[in-house]
Image (tube, rainbow, N blue to C red):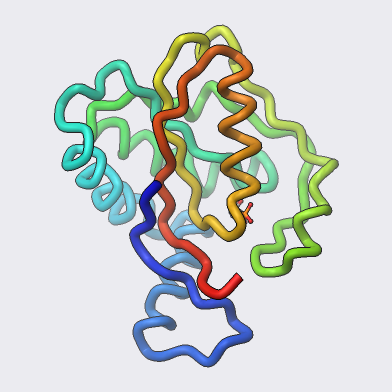
Length: 168
Ligand SMILES: O=P(O)(O)OC[C@H]1O[C@@H](O)[C@H](O)[C@@H]1O
């Protein structure tokens, strides 16, 4: 498990550095810094796993709707895979419906039942998978996603996150 930045929720007073991270995370969610984030992530993958990654799938936990997922992850995931040598999992996961995207509230985590994530189960069977999400807060999204993948016979080898929420 690895996170690049620490995300300070907006209810806390932020330093200039905290603001920089917040803005970067928000921009990433809007698909505005896919290439720079991909360079960061691919570099870390290479450092951590070397060149033995050609059989490893890079899979992003989908955003709250297919449209947002495309904006956030299509280019990013393609670029991470290209730069790191991993297999791009993007087209093997799709989203139906929309869940409310509440990032900082614990109660918000219950509003999750209108989104359906479709996995290409045959594709993931027997694959090693590195999971990515923009933000990890309590870890529920990661745990749920990893459990799903493993139920199809994949081995989840870890998670990378752009940022980890502080003080939750
Ligand atoms: O499930 P936890 O880790 O609490 O929250 C992470 C989720 O909250 C959102 O900001 C992220 O995009 C991610 O989907």
